Image 1 (spheres, rainbow, N blue to C red):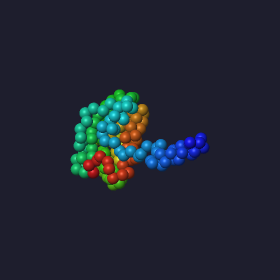
Image 2: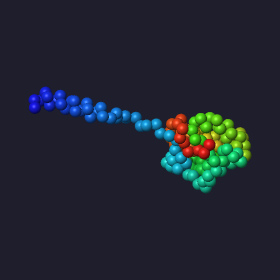
Image 3: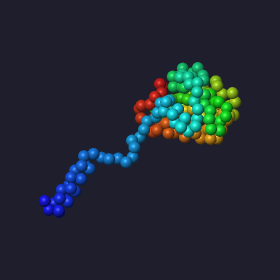
Image 4: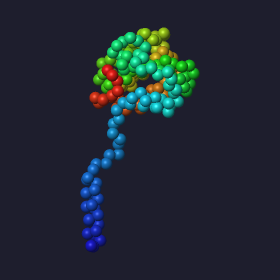
Length: 161
């Protein structure tokens, strides 16, 4: 076979192989992680999680209880332990629909409304008494953002509501 024919055959073969599948260099959008994913990310950032209680919304709202996980958190520049309530909703639509109920629920566990703190990272809401230390809060925000992935835009998700 002549060198020109060999080059043409190699070129055609390369085109054929390349056309068999589309190679993407961008990762597929990820959905929101479950509580294990969240705690792994927070631990990686230096936050300790202890005394985890599923269904601990900090209030008696029957719609929020199945979505809630209570836990104690500390680490980085947060020297005192903070009882936190994480609400994990099924997707962004549910997050939007029910988000306001979390603030009402917080009235049951917040002792000083002036220092109440929360982080919204769809489909999650994290709420607790503040004030939180600066590095601690930044790590919470970062960890929830990573764990949220695409923010529950799809129909999946982990929350019961």
